[in-house]
Image 1 (tube, one colour):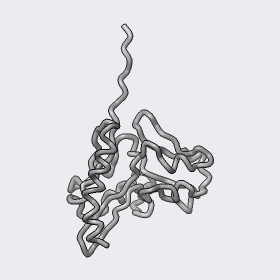
Image 2: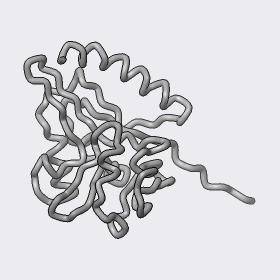
Image 3: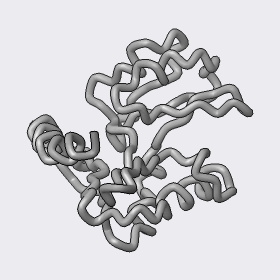
Image 4: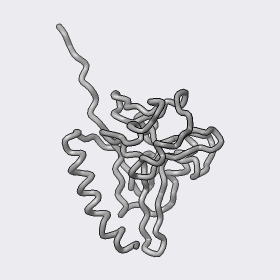
Amino acid sequence: MNIERERPMSKFLVVDPEKCNGCRKCEMVCSVKHRGISNPALSRIRVIQWEEEGFHLPMHCQHCQNPPCMAVCPRKAIYRDEELDRVLVDYDLCIGCKMCVSACPFGVMQFNEERGQTFKCDLCDGDPQCVRFCEPKAIDYVETVKMEMDRMRAAALRCAAPKRRRAA
């Protein structure tokens, strides 16, 4: 009997800005997980805050289907991990040219001056710590199918547009 192993369903991070209270705990746990120090500047998730409006938006890598960061990398240091359907950086190949930082349409590719390399969300190898520690449950890690991704992103942009106009 030939039993093929079924590929796990794709998962991605979803943010509900209505629930985010701007505590930035997600940034802290991310930097502790990846660098061993609580420093939001070393976090792979960034909370963009509009204080006067009371609006907070955690921003993270979208693990794009056709990632601009991957397309511009001259060393092919950015690649797709098919197992978790995520985009990763091979730090042994990264030369720190920052082309990926410029190419990211979401502005979430970061650069570590000390190490001379870029860094981004890696979904904590399938157990995102930002999700585990977000007390208001503003961040979730949910299953999806690729066909629905474009539709969900479009809906998210429509929901965020009025808030961005108010913030401007």
